[in-house]
Amino acid sequence: MWGHMGGYGGGWGFGPLSMALFWILIIAGIVVLGKWIFDRSGGAPRGKSALDILEERYARGEIGKEEFEQKKRDIEG
Image (cartoon, rainbow, N blue to C red; front, side, top):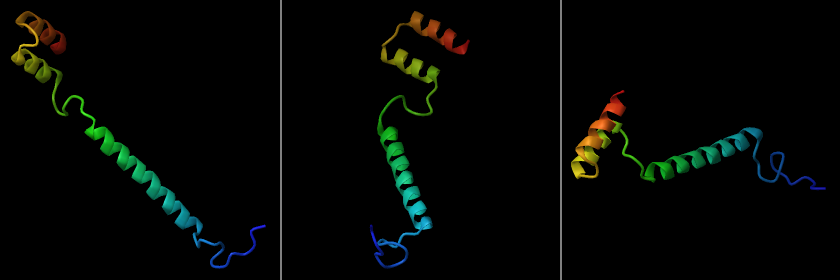
């Protein structure tokens, strides 16, 4: 049906190794793009503990002293 298209076993000249490399590069590109997108998507800053965030909320006046103390006890277990 296709006939012989010349070259190295096909019209494109890709062997099994070249095709595997092609798909590995495509998948790696998708993974890198996904990681880049998710790293940019906000959320809690990395490296901050729950206690650090609680202290910041208290310092900004978002929570009162009693709530701060209760939550601190909860966090520390």
